[in-house]
Image (cartoon, rainbow, N blue to C red):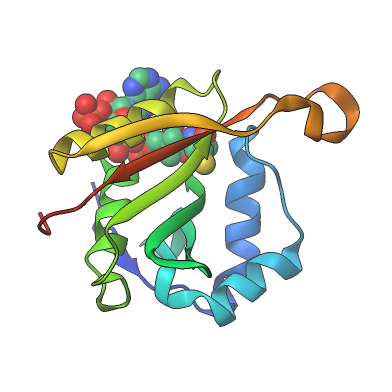
Length: 164
Ligand SMILES: CC(C)(COP(=O)(O)OP(=O)(O)OC[C@H]1O[C@@H](n2cnc3c(N)ncnc32)[C@H](O)[C@@H]1OP(=O)(O)O)[C@@H](O)C(=O)NCCC(=O)NCCS
């Protein structure tokens, strides 16, 4: 495999990230503006994977305003051609090892019940850190318009006792 570089996103990556998210076919595609905003204002808690000038992976996250020890992971996307090679987990690990996350003790993400790869990703991540993964309901399906969105379950992972 050609070298994959993990780095903080820059605003110039916004459009590529939007395409990557759109091409997953399963993630909510947010506005191009929102990806530019993440790249500009939240780059210390977001990460991209770049291979030969292409963005092949992305994680958006932020520390909860009311609980800076919790990193909330919003979206994780890996290009189809790169899946199953450990890149999703490597992106999350790169993030949690950042200076900006040095006081983070928990990682939270929401997962819809049918997204087995997402569930496997977060459970595997918790296992690698030898820590807990607790699941509870975050947003029940009825809160979403249109009646075709699953519930979103919170996966709360931690505490992190050490950085692996
Ligand atoms: C979910 C996603 C990010 C995983 O990325 P990835 O790079 O393939 O994941 P990894 O290779 O790092 O695998 C992490 C773990 O999940 C497991 N896994 C990954 N895809 C899986 C699948 N389809 N079925 C079962 N297990 C799977 C791996 O075996 C690995 O397990 P391990 O910790 O026991 O070794 C990727 O499938 C994706 O982009 N999906 C579309 C978007 C999405 O659903 N995002 C998540 C919601 S925010």
